[in-house]
Structure formats: structure tokens, C-alpha cells
Length: 223
Image (cartoon, rainbow, N blue to C red; front, side):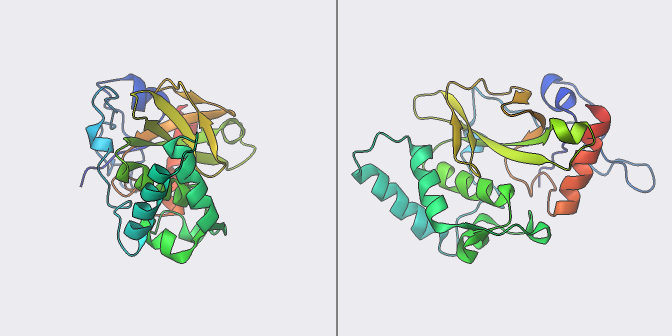
């Protein structure tokens, strides 16, 4: 399994030869590979493939197939991501629960009918988008207020390559879309800053809210 460490934006995105280590273990050793995953936006085929947390099973397959059929049949001016966003929000309820963050697959989230937070919504959106052939990159961020020590606020966005080749930034939790997006940007709208990018949270060794908090703490030290 490919592992990816969320470290500072400068390390993750700008340097092609980064050897900076992230969270050391109790013995002072870094348990993760020392090179962060970098996205090749000109050849994004890897990000069309479903990752382990976005695999479509347990009823989600039927849902994405129906959504695709509905979209093709409609004479709507909505883009595919906008239509997918509407389908997801019509089905899901938000029930914030830190103990459920990053522990369920997209199919398990869909089957439950509730999302524990922004990561669950992003998992669903990524699964739908990739099913429709759109490369989708997870973008993990922290907020200005967290870096100032005023909150524990972070958020996950998606970068999506549209059928015309343009990239957009998408916030699945809040149904917000930024077209004509420059992929790879370090600063996002609303005061968010990139910790790292990855194809799938489980490939990035993010499997709990604690993992996420540890990564945020490391980013605070290095940003």
C-alpha cells in the first residue's frame, strides 16, 4: 500500500526532492516514507481509479449508476459535479461524530445515511466523480485560525478535472465550486492552507480522527 505523509505545504507540494520526515514515533523514528506524494496534473489517470476507501460496493454501485443515468437524461445546465453534489446531499444527513471520522469506506457511509463530517462527504463525492471518469484529488487543509492557535479547524476539499480538461476546486460539505481553478495551489479560499494531497485517505495512513489531529499538529510546527 502506498503511504503518504501530510506535512507542510512547502514540503508536500513545492519540492520534488523532499526528504523531510513527518511525525516521529516514540523512538524518534519516522514511521512513514520520507517523500510526499506529488500530483502530476498533466497525467492524472491515477486519480480516476478508486482507492481502498472509495471502492464502490454495498449499494453504492446502484446509486452511482442511477445518478449517472439521471444526469444523462436531464437537460440541465448543472455540471456533473454539481449534479452529483445534489444527489449526495439529498441522501445524506450530517451527524458529526469524531469517533467515526476516517474509519468508514464511502460505501459504508452511503449505506448508513449519515456523514460524520467533511471527510465522509468527500469520500462519497470522490467515488461518484471517479465512477464518471473524472480524476479527483483529496486536498487536506488547515485553517488560519488553527495556525494561530484559536481552533482545531481543518477541512478537506477535492480537486476535480472536468471533461473539458479544466480543473475545479470543490467543497462537498458546503456545496461550493470554484471553476478555472489552478491545481496545486497552496492557499485555498476561506483562509485554508494545504497540508497535503492524496488519492485516498487510507493510502495516506489516515484511519482515525487521531491520525488527522497528529498530522495537523505536525503541520502547525512546519508551516
